[in-house]
Amino acid sequence: MKNNNLKSKDSDVDNIFKSTDKLWEILKHIDSIREGRNNFFIVAESMMIAAYMALISGESILKYAVSILGMIYTISWFFINLRQSNRIDWIMRKIRKNHKAVSEILNVGKGISGKIFINYVLPISTGIFWLLLIMDTAF
Image (spheres, rainbow, N blue to C red):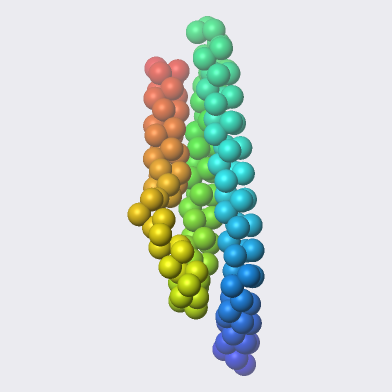
């Protein structure tokens, strides 16, 4: 009985994704959310870096707290990006599988990927930066 329910849910999902308009709506929505979150994290990280730099060297406990918070934000940013990217990749696979014309449009920009930069380079380099600040403050 459980397998029948799963198959029913899978077919419902497949039916939703047979409509190109619905796919585009969902893809644009998820991409918009991802871009908004990236902008939020970049601004938040910048503000924390500015706060860290504004602290006097004698305020090491505050510097340590800001740098730990920055590391937490960076780790969150990294995993949220991966989750959103997985969702977008799944929808792109559905589009490429079911919609030949849309797939051709998507393939035009295929070689130009900001995904690696946004998902890996920015969060990892920012994480390294925070780690260096944590070590500088702690020692």
